[in-house]
Image (tube, rainbow, N blue to C red):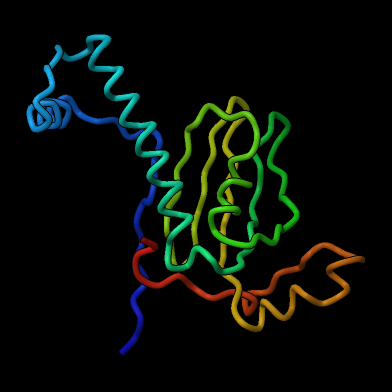
Length: 170
C-alpha cells in the first residue's frame, strides 16, 4: 500500500475565533457573553490565540517526528530583497521552527505540511521569510556528519538527504 501525503495548515496566527465560536465557547463554559467588538470579546480572542500558539508549540515538541534530526532551509525577505539562508541542521522539528521564528516579528506565522515537508512563513515589517523544514533520511544523517561539513564548508543538501513526512504530524 502506498503511503499518502497529507497537506494542511498546522498553525496560522492570523486565524481568529469568530463571534459565533466565542458565544458557543462562553455558553458551554457558563461564562458571560459580551457584545461583538467589545473589549471583553477581543480579550477572549487574543487569549485564545495565545492558547493556540502554546498548544502548537507543545504539539511540535511531542509529535511522532518531533525527535528526528531535520534541516531548515529557505530565504529571508529583507528591505533590499530576498536572501537565501545557509542550511541549518536542527535536532528536531521544534528547534527548527523556533529558529525560523527567531528575531523580532509581529507574530504573523503560518506553518503548513506540504508534500512531505513543513513550510514556515514569517511576516515582519520588511516582508516575509519563507522556510522549508525537511526530516533527514538515514543516508542524510550519515552525510551531515562528514568532517567537511563540520569544519570547512556549509551544508549543500541534496534531495536524497531527506525523507517525507507522511500522514498528520500530530
